[in-house]
Image (cartoon, rainbow, N blue to C red; front, side, top):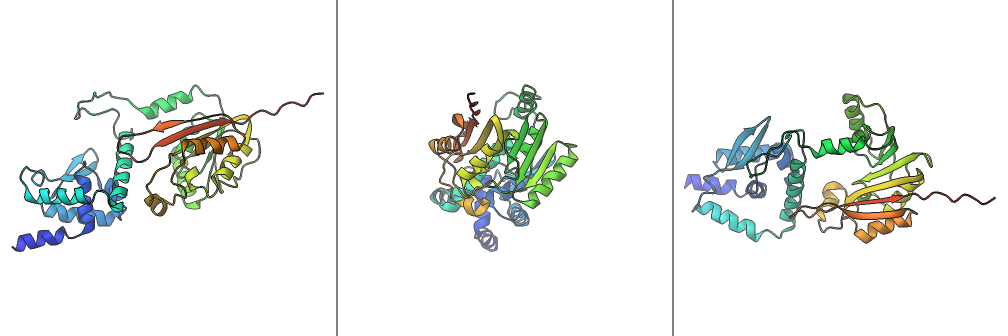
Length: 318
């Protein structure tokens, strides 16, 4: 009875139940679990330690990472505790908290699939072919060899990962963000990578600190849904372009995940395809195209790509 009492007290915590539900989906490391649950890393580590001591969770090393998964004994056929937990998870599936967990879980899995620093190719545990050196990141960099030397503005650059990728093929990059803190981290990353053709500037999307008609490409990557006035932000991107320059937008399609407003500071829950098209054409861009850039089954976030060209001014007749 003492053991049962301790176990029930352990499972009386909402965070630990959410943790078990997530681990029922796959194995994760502490950093991934922190992102999924939206909890402090110290709290996640403490909960994992308690669940491990109770025999409900196991840990294993994979390269330089430690991953956690449900104990095989817990999920064994006929385990009454797992039957009870699974029933509770199923009944709570539609709750706002679990929907948010699921959305973040899908994003972590997407990032894991695209993390080429950890895995050069696909493993064979699910039957797929192992191809050493396979990397979409490498292909994206290779395509940069085909581009001319351009002046690029990365608007809403965040910590500068896209800015630094563009710097490998661009003549120069001007990266703009409203946060002094993230710009400090971006500058440090550029220094570590010995990249010197990026200029970092603090500013708002609706008032970009770049002169008129001086850039070839303006990037808005996952930035537009943070803008207070998206139409103004696109207009600013157009303003800084030379004639024939292009605006490239990567953003989320309209979704129902309202938790992103509080958790991530999103001002807009994505944009509809026609809405995104109207934003670009309304700013004076021509040859506007909008298409799906990424979509995964079960993931509530669909990525849209949109591109438009700044028209050339007609020469006055003499």
